[in-house]
Amino acid sequence: MTEPLVLSEDIEPGIVRLTFNRPDKLNALSTPLMREFEAHLDSLAADPAVRVIILAGAGEKAFVAGADIAEYRGNRRAEFIAYQLESRRIFDKLEALPKPTIAAIRGYALGGGFEIALCCDVILCATSARLGLPEGLLGLSPGGGGTQRLTRAVGRIVASDMMLAARRITGERAYQLGLAAECVADEALVETALSRARAMLKVAPLAQAEMKRLIRQGPDAALPVAQGFEQEVLFRLYGTADGQEGIDAFLDKRDPVFKGI
Ligand code: CO8
Image (tube, rainbow, N blue to C red; front, side, top):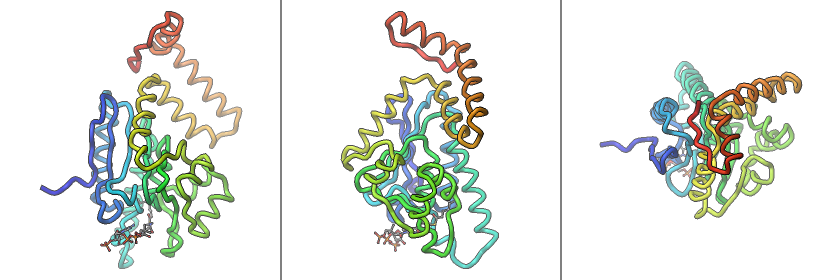
């Protein structure tokens, strides 16, 4: 039997880890790998028992070193465009998942690999992490949202420095820039991701889904409009069973039991 290109593991109730699994090619995003990844995203999205998804890379060297450059050779324009369109759809699907996602990065997260991380809600880095968008070195430009999501995340100057000089940054620098929520020793990364995921299990799922959307979509709207979105969400959540459960539980000095309704 051939090894899956994306491993899916139930780590603890509610927490699933997807691991990109082509370590000999630094987990490069081949077409078959992207299709397996999408199939996992679809089934995790549809499974109400799954609350948090952690993304990781197999092996010591990389999270994901980008698109599979071997597939790019030969100026096969139709295939190239088809891959880019399919990948963009999958990246957008990852970003829009109504559950929290965590990218746990050890080693290289380059090109499409970094762009996948930018589609996640929280990036955690090991000190070995090296993040970058080196497409310019191939005579190309990013295609998985990197020019836009990175620029929105860190601003124009740092994004330009990283892209125009193909400069990789370390996990520690990513943390300083606010790109990573934390940077820890390599040996601590798995446990750190797990502890973040456990913390996420305690937050009401509907509230998480709504906050995700607000965080992503709000900055593209004018502030008063975005604040309007925020208020609508809060009013809606207040009327949900979980909204009332959270308030009751606090006042009754007990842990809330959220049902996602
Ligand atoms: N594609 C295909 N194979 C790769 C890739 C890749 N992106 N990265 C590494 N590999 C392969 C190498 O060819 C090598 O294979 P082999 O052993 O068969 O020769 C193996 O992985 C190990 O790599 P290296 O020997 O190169 O390892 P080093 O430690 O010397 O170097 C680097 C590590 C610096 C990460 C180096 O491998 C490298 O520069 N890789 C390419 C990085 C890159 O340019 N990434 C961007 C690709 S373009 C892109 O991502 C566009 C995104 C589009 C988004 C939408 C689609 C997802």
